[in-house]
Length: 447
Image (cartoon, rainbow, N blue to C red; front, side, top):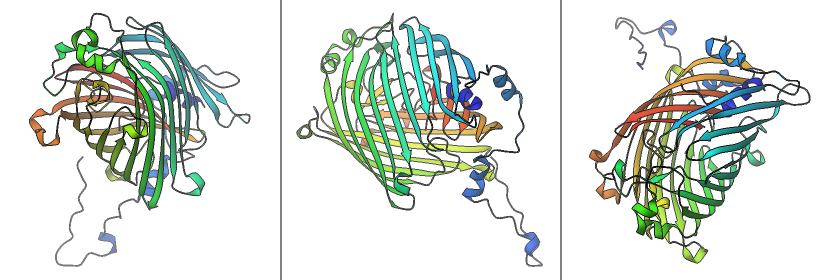
């Protein structure tokens, strides 16, 4: 639908507690003196459910509405593409987003988003995305692109909760991707920005995840993945190649390697939504196991612990404090540099480029205040504009015993986001710090 089209491709850039005063000591508080009970999770989330009513449009919404072209089969929003990546530089183009009505014109069957853009390192890139939304918490995505130099992608994603009328949920990723975006700087926290070297990485294979309920909010999660990966020459002009700056590391990475892994997780999750949480807690501990006897090229294990909490101030849904903590480390064979633990733009530290820090483990803390600026209904959907100041902190290490808080790198910033409930968020993050300034355009929350 119209608002869904707006959100799906938007690439926009942009607590004090209330305390009840005690009554006089001379008398016991009566019913009138009792503070109102805090809202339940159901009461907090209910205003976000369909149909959305009682919200007034503001300037943000009027601007977006003015850009829409109404057609018989559904609205089109011609969006410009403009992002400044720390790794690839400026990327400009256009992406018309078309939301196609269902037969009754009461909703959208699917959303299509073809695109064309230009980057001096990649040349022209042609892309296509198509989204299907079977219900409020399920999603199906097809995505493909091809660039004049190096990059190409074919991707399928499916997520389905509530399987067989239970709390079980399943997801499937199938991918063929060559990306020239990441770089390698050497190992550890002391690696230098001046030692940056570009490379491309081929990744193709699949990943399947099943979360099976043990009791309320507690899940046993099983993940199976099989990927072929290989380092290649990168596309970035004016930056050394890994093959030239780190020849021994590149020699270990340029051969195609098979990564066959299984991961077992214990997961607690009482958040209200898998993609756009407003309240709740998610905590997990997992062990990933890869063995040559099962067809992998490496014997190794990856241990991960993660905690996320979403605090809804006064239960109103306008101010949500989001906190994430993650600890991850590997044991076993030494992996190619691209398969070791990384900390950067898409892995927890938004001020840095992808792959900025590499080692056998990392610790990451992210904190942001998600503030809803506007909320407008459209049919059974709800569009929100959100601003979020944030701060990231993280470090890598060769062994957990060698971690020190003095190694942490900090990156504050600001994000502007456009949400279309019930499934999608488009965001533009501006982060800065010791690594300089970085702008990130993404689909989905960072955590």
